[in-house]
Image (tube, rainbow, N blue to C red; front, side, top):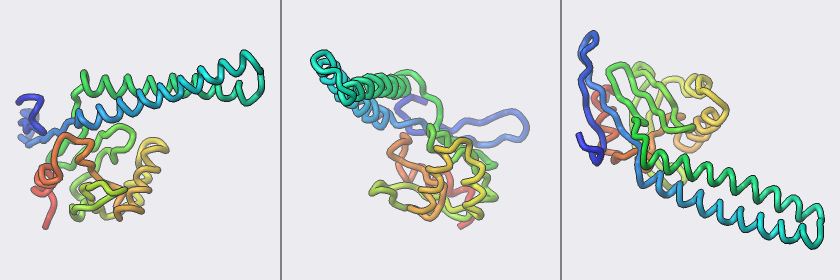
Length: 192
């Protein structure tokens, strides 16, 4: 299948055959993140220059703090921009994999990782921060939150539970697929 295709279905041959549907990251989302990070790098770089010039004439604590914060911010923002550009231009690994046992949401730092079909009670449309999302209701939201690797994923899952009523949400804006395509891939495994 071409890279322009939102998702592809492949058959595995090891053991019992199963259908696996893979969704890839949205290049548009990565482009927006890269542009935002580059703008932040320019702003931080400007603060660094202003702070550096101020330190040359009057070495105050404020000028040193502005210089240091501007330099650190510019480096971090450039790093984020390069990561976003790399994801957009080079790496095309799936961020959502749907198989016969469940699905894996690998959206960087925010995905809910592995969810088994036995945990899923339903799928529905929802909105988080004004953005449409696919909400996946689970039997035990607290267990899903507790097993997330790292504090950022746990905070994201807890926030999702407060805003959407479930810790598991799939974001069509970050995935190269529509809500309907995502729900269709999940629906065949979820009882109505």
